[in-house]
Length: 471
Image (cartoon, rainbow, N blue to C red; front, side, top):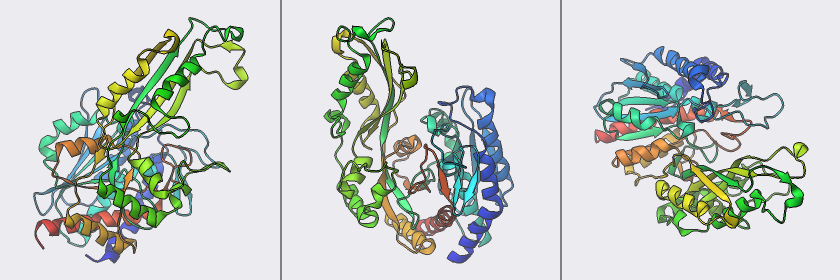
């Protein structure tokens, strides 16, 4: 397959139809149900789904079938089927729901206003990962334009990934006959270490989210009572010290750790050799702030294979300007505990609840309300044909070899598919590179990388067909 016509088709499609449609998508505040419980009434998710559906229906792909499916009391999914030249199935995945706005956007930027600056398209959800449906079908178009064979392809776009994909298992069960047993899963919701080559994710961390609430009083009292009554914040701090060493960030109980496979250690060393200081350089530290580790290999492992805690929200704390001399009755903290890929998330959630609630200091009333835990994922051994196909594509369209690394975030669907289809191969990739800042302010999509990634997907699909035919 010639790289030039594939890349030319991808470039033309992105400039002519994808980017204008993606800009419309960014304008839709299609927040995931966790962040918009009234999503049905607001209609933003349905608008995002309709926009993508309309674009997809116009694609000139032979016998393409596009459907929007709605199970009762579930967010919708878009399912597309494109018959191929074999009965093998390739499943391509993405999502169309978004994280909330977040504060701190730079002047001239806004989560719901698309802004193109050079190679970057700013706005919430473009890179994470509203582009997925457009890239997937454009890859199929590129193959058809060149009369190149591929397997049967199914594209699945969900609308609750940012909420942990609670609706997706019901659709996977309902669509079992149409999803079949994929030979290859291509996920377009991941990251890249730089914008210079194709990156494949080899692992994803699990997660336990929940709200820790500490109650010490029935109502607030004058802070002169401090010393008699313990501060709810101090009790919360003491409870967190059962979990985390606040000096180093190390998670203390062994239950939350896992052994790191030798292959993943080797890959981390290879990535550190390519990225070096850029591993930490993509983080927007304030002046004078240092990374948690000096060794780039340790930074990679700490963010992909070690557990880590973040406090992502709080309640019961007034703004400083509104804070009087009052001993507050309660403190609530939203906790996000990232887990190694192979740690049992459900067991970790039970352990964490027990750790925080048992024998609270001073007999305080402590509750830890756990959200649905998300399991991690460790890729099966990469078969020779897929490694060759990924490297082939990366060299063709980026001019550099493909790279492999773990990811610190979670994609619940991958854990689910890994359990359901243990023999499938996985190409987990994406456009979330340095500075792209998914979930935070100033999220952007790096357009040249998205174009090249689209071409890479086409190349991998063609090589997958040839490999399965023994060519």
